[in-house]
Length: 418
Image (cartoon, rainbow, N blue to C red):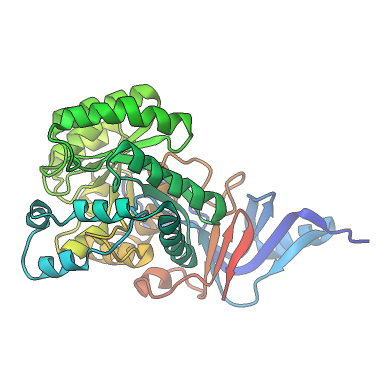
């Protein structure tokens, strides 16, 4: 008779565990504030963290209570699973032609005006079947999970009609039901004005009255996003739209300050959970976001893809903002989709501490998605965890994305072992 207590599992020993707990919710973080538990273990119960601490102490408890043991035999550092808080990975087609034009000197806005850009992805995504989109997206989710992302936000926004936006959100939800990585869907029907429309306010009203009630009724998303920019939506119409969506019960977020600065004002006035991009943000915009308690989600992948400067992440932290880092993985401006690499490069360029960079892709990324059950290895949190083949956590960023996790757990279950 098996007398093992199967509801509890002790995993370890790890050379180090970084629980990412007891850190400030916003503002700068010194590396000395980062808790590092040496020769540590994590006790998991029913998919959640029960406790972390000294492996030897936990091992004695496990033997006494006949807990299941999952032995780690090599030097490893354990972190919470990474959270990618801003992506567009539900799409069809490639925008390699756009990229070639950009590196040859054309601007993002010039390419958009000439029929490239987002509308090119809209055409290709509309042409794809639901089954094709599911297959494309599943492959991207597979890669993300392999690289340690256990939670990933995914936007619609390449449909831009009621029918096509519902198709995209259905794809996201279908993949979410069958994939280990957890997906957080966001309705970005307000990505830009579709080619069939000439009046932005009328289109946004159509989204509010015809699309969002169906999104709610079918449980397809509880988040709404809008792109505030010259080639997308203006400040006044965007604010009106977000306030109406919020009144319906949606969480709201904003594509803000990528090329101009009106989006951060919209995010602050709408009480958005996060403002994303922020490459053009200055002191005034940072102050607005700070006063409104909006999370700043910066997207270094877009800066790398467009060949432009990063968002001023150092200034944001020093200005008291909660900083998250996400990939913006999309077919146009950010096709790379490598969160750890991008966070490492941004950290080096913006002089972020190791603690600030790691927090931005774990606990603070969870805040950007309004998720309170993950991002830390603390009692009651999801046992979403990743382990790197090193005995020194500082090597994770030191290798600038080339040191990948070789073990991944989702809800305490091992989903990758190399």
